[in-house]
Figure 1 (spheres, helix red, strand yellow):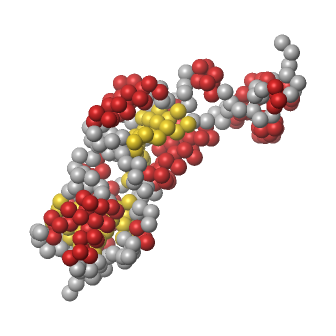
Figure 2 (cartoon, one colour):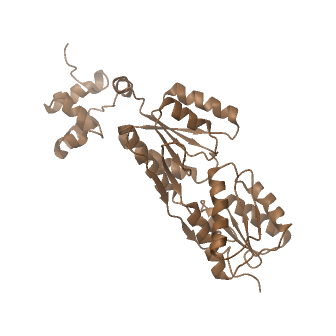
Figure 3 (tube, helix red, strand yellow):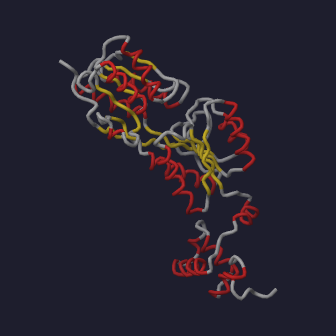
Amino acid sequence: MPRRSNPTLDGPARLSDIAQKLGVHISTVSRALNPRTRGLVTPELAQKITDAAAGLNYRPNYIASSLRTRRNMTVGVVLPDIQNATFPILVHAIEATLAPENYLTLVSHASSSYPSQDVLVDQLESRRVDGLILATARRHEPLLRFAAKNGVPLVTITRAEEDLAVSSVINDDLLSMTKAVRHLAELGHSRIAHLGGPADTAMGRIRWAGFQMAMRMAGLTPAGMTDTAFNTREEGRGAMERLLAGDLFTAVVTAHDMLAIGCIDVMKQRGIRCPQDISVIGHNDMPLVDMLTTPLTTARIDYHRMGTEAARLMLQRLADPDVASINLALKPELIVRRSTAPPPA
């Protein structure tokens, strides 16, 4: 079969075209262009091959590669709420880590309704994703069963699974609550309430328990506790109304920044000043909470690092399905702004 005189004009360049141009074996070209095997080629030769591939406009044939490796080079990322401002940070970090290894990131939104999640499970199964990074927080999650049933490598974010041997990257929510309560106690607050997240999520359950633990450590008794169905501004408003109908308190620790914003809405409507009358602490440090009329004190979670670590753990599992599970707990930072102050006299 005659060789093509000009691969850029006659069709897409192939590995053999690069090998012919440089006078090396085709297997050497393949190793140099594969991030997982590039270390088998000297850096100087790898750079020459990479430059030649760019000059010939070479594009990897992922369909042929998937037939050889039985992989689709796709990792599914499932989010509970695509409107949450922290998740773009998370997804960007995951994509930035997976892309150099030639993996495509397929982002999906898991509704809270189980019928739609069953449809999502069917779609993921039909697309034969190579791995699954799960950021949903519901305790009884169909996607966990899907991954276990099909042997799909799984990494969870914001939740650790006690019953499954899967790697996870979480925030140390107990430490978050400890720092929040300690900050308020040091300001002089003793009447502290808690506005929790959904009780059917791992995050909401742990932060609820973490607040109680932190209060015991400070020698204090909660001045009121209520939870919400969703981490939304509207739910925060309703929960704050319930808290204000109970015992008096001078500070409230919330399980999410959106809940905290809902609290402040109600306070403004009632003429309650933040923080002069009631201090408010959020959780997550979402983008723009520092731009509120009263910038929000909140527990900062490093979502960029969380996404990077989750993708790194996924690559480890894809390279070796038998690798031991790793559970990483990232340390939060309490960002003190103007929504907290000493209690009124």
